[in-house]
Image (tube, rainbow, N blue to C red):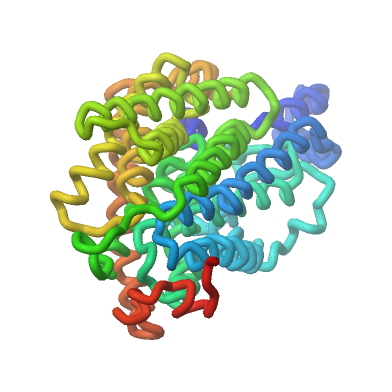
Length: 462
């Protein structure tokens, strides 16, 4: 594997460096076999870094908070009163469903050895993980292997929270009209067929996008483009909400949405800074640029809306902040503050255009702007990472100069973005058609008019 290929994975602090130092005398021996044995012995004696582990456990909790209660409140606050409970139920249920799927087989498909396109079943039912609960672990093998300073239990939990929030993001596109049974079945299938393979492509050393050298620090392609494109396809397949363009579709409780967006903002530090894998300088820079991008994107959306519509709105402010958070996600560990400022401005303006003009021109009903914010701004962030990447932030022992932005890296980012876009769109369309045949996708017109709270869950808010 070429040295720069390693830069596509989050650059966790490498226990291998310490192992190599410990094995110094053995490495000086003449025979490769003796050196390998000494290195293996040193690795076996490696201990978990408690500081890194504590930071990753904290980050895991923050990312979980992004879905419950963050995203659930954010989405619930933007629907009509008759669908608030149903919307909350979607995020809560997906949290439970994704947890079980990830534990049973999802983690193995995403981070099992496998090949270039999907992991194998070597970690089915977390086989081999629990036995090494107190030891650091290595992902991959051979030259491409990446050593970690945390136990695999913490790594898989951190990755589980990403697998939870990604399908939850999709629900914003089909809000107020999908059957609950269809949502559950679609979530299971989509995680196994779409999310896990894409995560393997991008973040496992064996993955083909990782080998390509594409940069995705915390999920621009794996989470946001993936969820945004799936949301767009779902919105088109399900069709527009009953009464759209005639009935009042205004959010019932924007206060809930503001609380949800605020929790997302805070939780995003776990999402991005946690992806550094250690409590060091790179995590600090990721945290800083995350804050900068979110703040300036919120202002960009607000001022654009003010100029176009005459008044700045609360919904615009919180949507802008989320747009900035989305766009900085793939770049967080690769860019400096000034480029983060530029990324945030572009994301705020792009999100505003996608959530207003684009979906009205095209006629699709992306209810809560899953594609307009996550899809489009994820694309913006992925591409601009290729422009603004700062080499020293992505440096590894194998590539001390890191990966810097330029036309070559931009082309790589573009190739990876298009590949994920096309795969996700096609696979999602097929899965939705399968679900439609099995249980049906959409509630009846009568159920939709009554509201999902009553028609699907037999409950009413107030």
